[in-house]
Length: 128
Image (cartoon, rainbow, N blue to C red; front, top):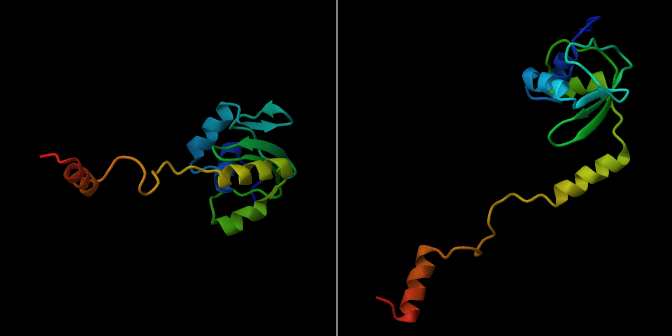
């Protein structure tokens, strides 16, 4: 399954760091994918042993390429083609951030009154 040359955007998409290949290419263009501290182009050829720093929406990854994957496969197989070498402090930051995640939904019984509560309030205040 290993091909000698593969584009960086296609590799990042195939190992499932990005949902689409165009999003992976866009991340490369915007400088969110780096090799040795320098921005990596989407057309860069990926080789085994390369180390990349990748910023996605949710996480900042550091990965080491262990194998070349030229097509998208299921997650359980895709994780065999890279090694996650993300620093421990980044992982703990993400876990803390996930624990403090706000869904944006309002808490039950907090906020605007329901129709029933409005009727009860009108009856209590003697409204019409």
